[in-house]
Amino acid sequence: MIEVDGRTGLERERECWIEEGRVAFERAHEAGVHHSDAAWVIGDWANRYNRGYGDLRLAVESLGASYGHVKVRAHVARRFDPSRRRPGLSFGHHQAAASLDDEVADRLLAEAELKNWSRDEMRDAVREVGPEAAQRRRADKLQAEVDRLKAEAALSVEDAEMIIADVERTGEALMKDAVRAMTLYAEHLESQRFTKARGTLHGNADRGLSRRLERAWRRFAGEDLKEIADRVGRVIANADGNVEPEPDGAPNAGADGDAGKAGVSKSYAPRNSRKKDAP
Picture 1 (cartoon, one colour):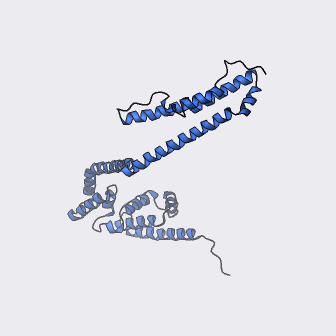
Picture 2 (cartoon, helix red, strand yellow):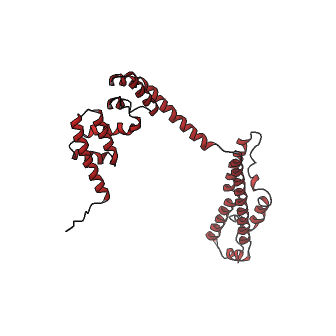
Picture 3 (tube, helix red, strand yellow):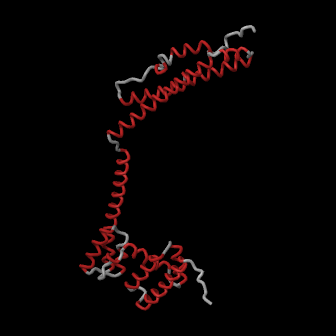
């Protein structure tokens, strides 16, 4: 009877990887735990499948190895792919340069191989360039952030013209909508149906209606529009020191401002001070 393999492809891949690790550790012990070739083999094995340090820790512990040593070898192996590794130098030389930028690390490794530096000499050289390299990395990050901010802040003339035109179109459309709303509102209040309906109110109901009409008028032609006009005026004043904001109430003047207010208020201005006509 043929047994069906119920493992998923990922599980089979992981088990093969662990078996490769077992072979790699056996070879490493044969060559010597601190032998450079063994260190590279372990590091490359750890990076071949590793889905994270948690996964690597479980695999390493299942093989009875030291997770700390494997983690270091994996880090150095990631920093130096096989094309950058110097065969004339030990794994320890590469480990000393692992914290440096690629360009600086390659330069020091080439010099170490040429001058036959020991690992201690390599570490001394890394300590000398370490602060300089760190400062250069910080400067590069800062410059990258400055470039990004400049790119975000940069606007071409065409972009600026499009934005200004869009603001103008939006303002015109909103003003037309406001005028249409005010006109429709006034027509309703001036209609005979509204006049007859209001004539049926007495006392508090009549005074409450007057207050509601007064609040509505403020929304149309008073506080809200005045606040917006003041904001626009401040923008104009800030853009050109020679231009002063419009006087208070000026944006509401004209056919749709004073005239409209005068024509509408005669029908629905607050009536708190008026006595109700006898029925």
